[in-house]
Length: 361
Image 1 (tube, one colour):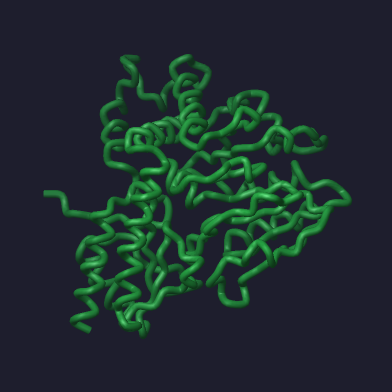
Image 2 (tube, helix red, strand yellow):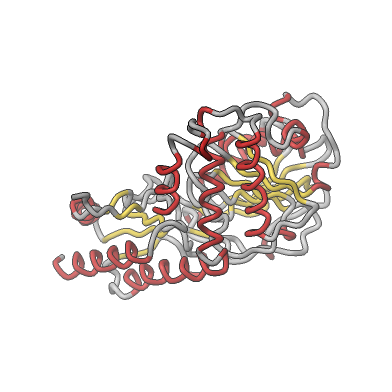
């Protein structure tokens, strides 16, 4: 008998069970071809259909307008940290970053190798416990773009809304909360996301870019790092991560059949609320890292009173089948990553465990 596992890994993370079952069923013989999709040419009609279906589903689920383009890239969000300034930061301009955690720091660092940068706002002084209000950002007319990280996996903070009247292009790393809630994509000139949290397995990165941001084709960029290379080839310039894109398509189908983004947003709110309630009603036994008005619905970070209690709780959780609850070393303690595929039942089981542990300790 298979032991019940509650997967709270921060990434790669839980995938929907129906998606895994579909992949298992089709693994050896895709579309009666006698082959696995992994064995097929990326130039074949069979794979091309999968590729285009994934794009179409993204457009439908996110309400992406016709003047945006979808790219499937490799290198994770980390490579985007370099590609973005290479393609969009010109001499005489500066790239402006809102620092809300480790990943925005990494994005800024890569941009400094390419051109002039600045920091619009930062919550580093508080060890990233909050998201700076847009009204406090330092912006200038020569900003090539403004870069944000919409959700911070390590610190458990998340933008609760986005500015809609910026004069410079807004670019968002949404690796850990894309498709977890409804957004107005027209507030952004670019959104990018590694797949391994809400979109599918690791290996593919989605970039959604407004055409006017791509209007200036810069020269002297290495071929594979130029967005136009992938744009002109429908992300098929070289061999893409075909199986990851297939799995991405399957996750998008699952999301559509589950009621779409509005329905998953309600589920995510319910899941997060249950765990935050367990923290807030513990009379300080559990303390959250993030300030209440910046709390993430994807990554819930919390500590117990002592490191000894943290270790004791995590040991009990592991014994009971809870996976991935260890917090990042920057914050310590515990972290429950509750992406789209994590069921409410897992969150309620965690709440029960937290209450049980508190009562006994």
